[in-house]
Image (cartoon, rainbow, N blue to C red; front, side):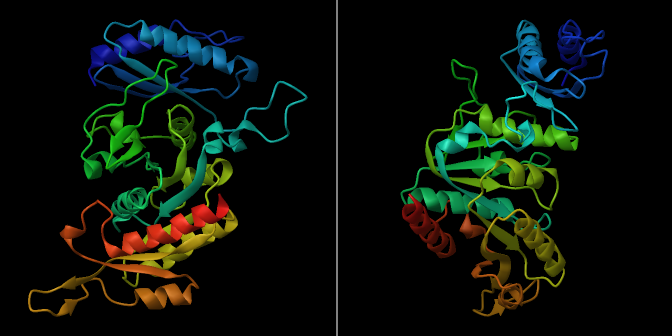
Length: 342
């Protein structure tokens, strides 16, 4: 990001003041997470303390101001807050906006979350393969990279294009492996540090659902970031997840991480479909089988009362097309569940 481009955007936003406020958005330090990529601008507005009935207006004013800057192609603005905004209408439902399910889920039959207790276990590779296998099985499948902090879908899918906009300013998902996909990585530079406060990350995830022109889907595969943080909280509050798949390695250290992930899903009433043991073994040239990270994946699953869905080899030929037998089997199981609940 060039300093000049950033200064232009901030100068434009400095002319926008929320209703009832004395300072501009910039002067009040309400502009956060500004990113610029090839004319595509993204930022968030911290809305704590602002009148709830004026939030849409200030968002529109900010987007319009930035859009007028020379060289701007698109503008993506997210509203974030540390606490839920109370409704200005006494007739509004009791639940806050932070727990409302986005309208897009009226057009998505099933949501499958792919999660892990920690990073580096190949979770995103599993998510891509599972989505690809579901698409091959005849399901209209979407893939959403919900890892706001470290998106890897652009690299895994080989996507270098940036999303285009519809006439009503929604992002158009990028087609990859026969399915619509979206990632924050499509909007920012690959070397851009993803430094988000919790509410900003939550807002970015919701925007990739609400402000993306998703088609009607049989299933949406959600690649969660590792751990049990803010994104998982948003998922629990606002995304009707049908089931979760946990990805782990067979090392002894995996037990505590998987246990935490299971506890999170139990607290949020999300059923865990089972455990995928990644990098479980390595087939040596002499025909023997090596276990570089130890053994015990099936025992781990049994002790946790989980189904052991697959033990994937440490093998680059698995790729990302979903053709491995483990993914086709799991996709068939999920497809059957989709048909039964249709």
